[in-house]
Length: 151
Image 1: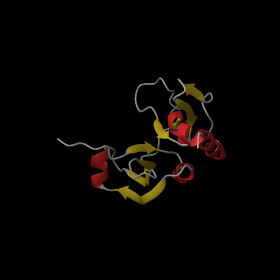
Image 2: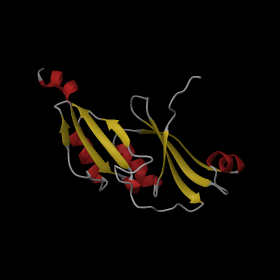
Image 3: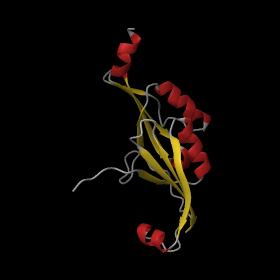
């Protein structure tokens, strides 16, 4: 059986604010729709399922996020997840400039959970609390930048 990761779906409080956050980081909206009907009820397992959706794609075309803002049933607010909770954990992005990524996130009032860490002079890493409490990880590969710094 062939298998391919299609996308990661995230339910959000405000789809427009979440789209703005991810598009400022460089993702592109490749589709928007409002879904409802028996097929949506069956696929998702919710009666009366009605949601605004947006599909976003990374610049390299390899990663996709599908955002959902539920109209019905009403979205359920929960405490924001913590990094050690079981279940859906985070969305991770490789970036070529973590400081620039953090500046963009800050414009959306999204800040690191603690700061920026360096892992064995290989990666700079930071977890940010994004829109709707989404944990977003940024990772800058320091090895990729070594050649650029010596040019």
